[in-house]
Image (cartoon, rainbow, N blue to C red; front, side, top):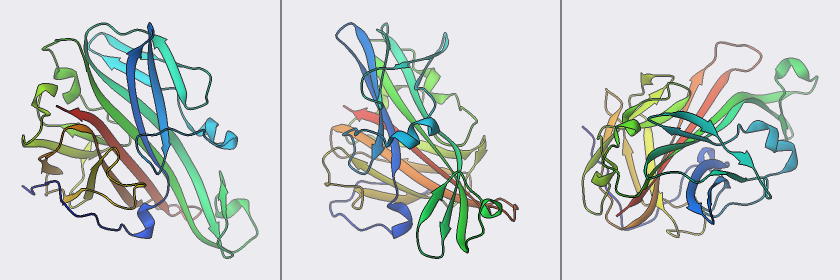
Length: 254
């Protein structure tokens, strides 16, 4: 199994990783549960989403042992709220719907178009999908097994431990990377935390998944961390040749 540790030096990512990423985080605050879509380069600070892109996102979901519920957008277009959550462990889920993008020969990009939707020369067409999960514990609940339930939709990180209490400074924890319920082998995984850098061009750690899609991670600092990965596959569609799936998972290291 490939080990994944926090590095002390930043490094630059390839240009393919520098597009927007998606994260989600939430908390009980002022009598409600508040969560933000963080669709930016500077984790964990949310920013207003371009108006034409708000339709690409589903409402944030809260997943628990008792079921699933949706939050409602309130005030800023990245901000969602619902009833305050009881003590327990939850998965908070954000999802960017499958969206085709084309890059034309002049370098410009068009959303919701494939090769058949334009007469211009097209360099690239890809269907982009993004998903983020946040693991949140409220109170002293000991039942964390919900975090081991895969969503089986898109790219996702699945914890291979059954208690969020294992997420603590210096502790070795294991994850699996999955695409539509199947393990993803030999995939690059990056890790970082809030305020590590001014944008996500620098990351604190790196690993590759093994042949079973598994890897290990040892956070060396307390705070809000994330893991992220991008997986590109051939769509076998001549009108849009690439499926571009991204995933993040966010958690607090105690």
